[in-house]
Amino acid sequence: MRTSVLLITLLMFNVLSAQPDWLYIEEDKDDYKGPEWVQKNKVALDINEAVFVNWSEGGTNSISGLLDFKSVLNYTDSYYVWNNDAHIRYGINKQQQKEIRKTDDIFEINSNLGYKPDQASEWYYMARLNFRTQLTNGYAGENEGDPISKFMAPGYLFFGGGMEYSKNKKKFLLYFSPLTLKATFVLDERLANAGAFGVTGAEFDDQGNVVVPGEQFRREVGVLLTNTYERKLVKNINVKNQISLYSDYINNFGNVDVDWRLDFDFKVNSFVRANFGTHLRYDDDVKTLVPSDVEGEFDEAGAKVQWKQFLGVGVAFDF
Image (cartoon, rainbow, N blue to C red; front, side, top):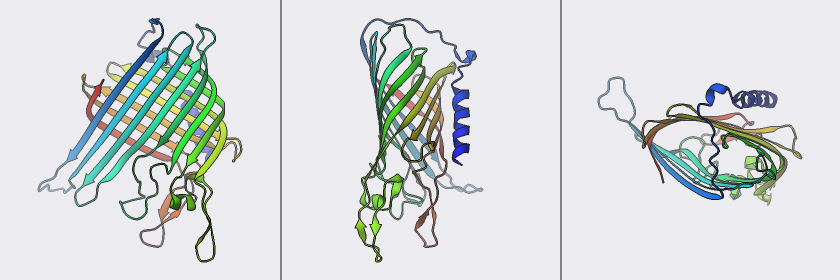
């Protein structure tokens, strides 16, 4: 399974990073005007509703909403770049006679500092920091039983240094880090004792009492390869590809963690837009859950490919 995921991911990576000529419908212009700070904020709201009244085929009334906020603060001069962004994305769904359930939950912060010794060079010495977690509890099925995830359970921190190749006004970025720290936080006693998300679980006695509590922190050091490719396909349609490959040197080197996002943005006018995206993950430390023989409980299964897809129509504001 591990080999198949790696081969498929590398194939997608090579295809999506090929930069075919027909995608470059915008010419790059040398418009550098000196050191500058640029701040941008964007908030978007998508709402979907379905209502049925005496509908012969039947159906369930539902309403869902998705709030997406991103703030960017970047510095650029002839030799240095410092790019910072914060991203919050949260979605909920309410169906008739059911409790509200979340459909998306992202809290992410990125900070990248780069230096190039030659002004004409497209290569940077780069230090990168990435932090991500979620805001509210997650459940395996309905909002019943114990949560399988919480705020900072898990939380992930990546910090490392390497080289970044930047082309076409940073629309194409290729980053390689031979030394990146990955820290996994599970700041919940029950989940830590269960050994969730790869941390070392608790030791129990014969009566099920905790003898040695589970660890709430896991440290890894490995190699990281990322690629970002953003382009305007045709008028009012943008595509953005992001892929990350990470392998730990100490714990089972060669087992690759995969994080791949592909997003399409369709702009109707200055405010109305639609978006379609997919997000694929594979992490051998994140085990899936399956229903157990005991009603309402779940058993741990092996790691599997995680995938989600979303489609939304709504309004967006830049400020």
